[in-house]
Image (tube, rainbow, N blue to C red; front, top):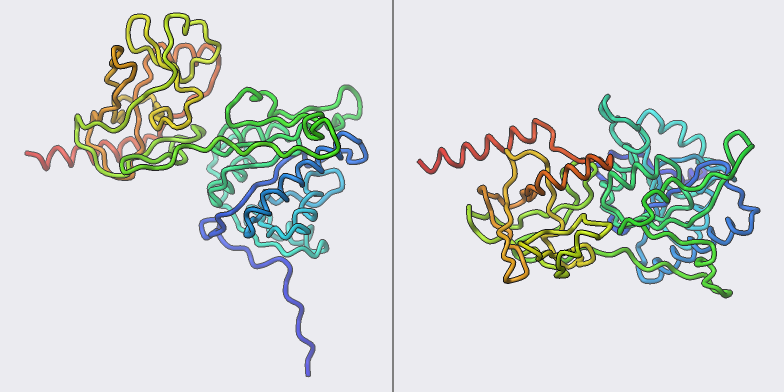
Amino acid sequence: MAAMEAPAMIAPFKPAAECDDRDVIHLKGFAARLDFADAATARQADALIDAVAAHKRSRPSLCVAWDGDAPADESFTRLLRRCASLGCGLIAFCYAADEAAFRKAWGPENLAIRGYVVEEPPDDVACRWAFLGVSALRATRATECLCLGGGPVALREFEASAAAFVLYEVSRRPRDGAGAPERSALLARASHERLRVVSTSEATGGGDEPATPPPPRPPPPPNADVVVQTSRLPGAGLGLFAVRAFAVGELVCEYTGTVLDSAARSLEDKSYLMRLGAGVFVDARTHYEVHARYINDCRDKRVHNVSFDKRPSERRALVVASRPIAAGDELYASYGPLYWLGADMRGEPSARLPESAVEALMAREREYWDGER
């Protein structure tokens, strides 16, 4: 009798669109020049693995995904074997052109891996590897990434996705071997609500037991009218979508938060600050339960479909449909010229809908009004 062939450790790759794994954490970080012999780096790596283990205890089907980086002793990928030893499934994403190289690199590791291929990005995409990472996050719909450091690509992925990132702060050797160690590019967004930075002292919790970072702040649950999902605006993060149809003038939701007086003008972060009237402001920055705080501005008045009915005496603003809204539509409102003037002066990026998407929405609206005649 012929000997049975051993099963392949790396399964045949499938298109990323066919990924049906939904209990996934993504692993990212520095892919080179990490020194695991350094005590601080080793502690941070242990803390990250402890966090994975904590997730695994409450989520038996947990999988760990990464963007196809090769195995290396000085890379965050060194942690993947430890994740597998916890019983986590491993999921890799790569471009079709890189699948053969991936198999050659990972085959000798003898790890069971499910792979998915991502379509090549459009020619105008600035960073091919960030596009891969964001595509992987969209495929798994993961809400959290654990990062052992991370360079400019990780920062681009953070800015272009809606996931919460937990950064285990480590440094790596400089590229030329001289100068100061390189810190994570993600630290540029250290104050962002979706980024949690775990310092070396925090990872040890000041004692012998590593501290597990708190879970990311989740968006509010959907209700009968609206739901928070990944925005259709490239790089905008989360957005608010209609669960059902709304007629023009119909109430969609409310914008509420911490009520402030004119002192609100001195706030450093005014991202979620709305002026309701003379000396009356409402700030939804820390009110993650407020659906309306997730409404984006696509900076195109042709497709703004909701407006704010500001009611200072009631300390709130009503979000009202200004155009016919279908179930599944993302909600867009104007933030006003002063908001974007400040953002443009600070050099902050803004997201816009592709012209093809704008034209499709306008055509549908024309069809709606034609039907009313």
